[in-house]
Length: 459
Image (cartoon, rainbow, N blue to C red; front, side, top):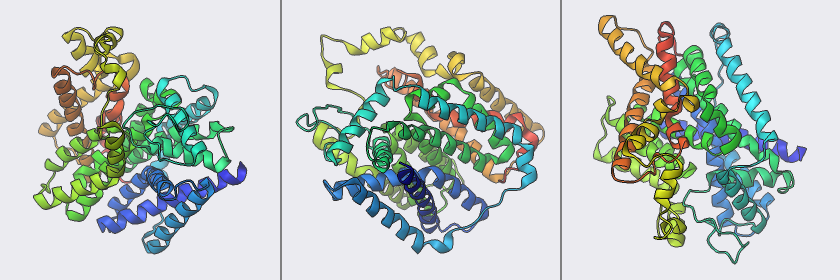
């Protein structure tokens, strides 16, 4: 187990570095701030890319032992790093700025430490993590992703007909393959805390040590986000991926960056079906930026996004007849009336409840989301008034992140309202969907809470 863990750490580092050198090669970035952002993105996207490569290699090398798959994946990642080795850069933060923000950083570190401890204490108790772990074990024992989605009950006697791509399942299988099986299944629980840390890193990259540090503390202190790490497990991964895609939407300046933004959206789609939100939000952010999209850039953006997730969408269509759905066959039984049953259980029968407890859940559920939505709204209003009276010098990178966050939040409320108005509760049926843009809310609150620091957003 010790040797396998060390190999896992090495592969994890390789994946982060490989994704960074790919990011630089694709975007052609030479600006220091841009590269720091790419480093932060690569910290979490690297493992997501690792999952993608791991699943793809497993499909190509059908039935081989997992150590062979890991050897091939390591070789591919090492080759990428070797080819792009000249793009690897060092980074030394300014000690004074780190110390100034140390209360926020220490608080965030303590919360992440507690969450990491708790994930090893609590058993899998929720439906989704139990399903993912069960499917991951099935994939591991059959040495194959051929039965993913798991619809062939003759293989392993399991039926799990979801359309979510295998990002999370792939990471679980990869981690467990390093320790030799599922007898020590606890080690894969580190996935959720890692992506919680990845969200902290991206907030620090765009907000600086002070604003980003406070935003991180706000995010991690949100009850539902902590719950996502210690109980739901999957959500930190998809939230990080969507956050990166949305924030980078304001950085698209040419065709090369359009391709990179498409790849980020593709990986968000690969992380979970809710990644479709990243595509819509990132595109809106792009249209509001200085560099408007044109047909060529939009085409390259779309092709890159679809290329990443297409293999799994094709498999979904072949096995389930749909590339992306949030419905199950049993839910559609006419005598069951599952939709009404679920709405009744969750208090969403009346239109007023659907709006207040569903679309506006961030405001109504102060126990789960804290006061942050109210403070974000107040901050947006006060910031607008303040800018009219006395313009504040906001660092470009933070300004772009705040614009992206604001547009993303407007997009989410518009999307949830539209879906609900059409008679579906898909966007409001649980708090985890409303949690998707919580990093944006945290960034808003942190930025207006310490405006004197917004002009010093460099990390």
